[in-house]
Image (cartoon, rainbow, N blue to C red; front, side):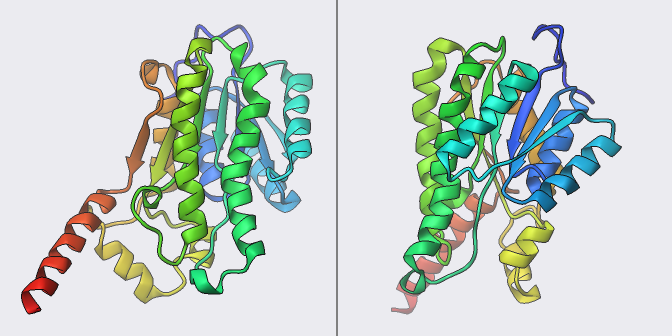
Length: 273
């Protein structure tokens, strides 16, 4: 079912997805294309942009690709200047670009820390800041940031990503209040475990680990990129017009179940003691 995009101008609305060439970002871009949006996808990788563009155009979408390293403010400013030049508008910004890998904190180099925090936290801020003038002019502007439940729990083995995502949660809520007078809604989606080519390579590095994660999800399965994309589409759309500053968790109940299991494990440990 396509999104109702009526009432936001004669021209098709425009959505920009960072990291939109592959994986979850591409699933989000495909959903917005089905909803009637013109797409802008940004990525550091020309290969990823080419792949995303081919997929979207094969499905009838209109897409602009812009090579961008979101860690670099000048490149981010150039991205939004290009959007303004090409379309003259921006209605939805999805900050999806991310970096992650498993590493013990004591073994993590400063460069590794800066790389992930730079993409996730700095990049989200730079994109929001540069998008503001275009969003303010939109009839129904929305920002959706992609975070994770370990932003408010813990991310052992991914402390850099957990810290950065926690920062994005706070940024989401702060901007929701600051930008409400301009009609700009700012929300976030916290996906649970989702299998993509990228997550299989960086996170679910063994079948034993994958099964361990799956067994901790109350619904008993990993999510799909399309399910996450639907949540992003909802928060960006008319049905969510009175929602801002919210984090929508789409994880099959994982973070709730994880908390309960932790409590049970602690209780059993005290009993044994």
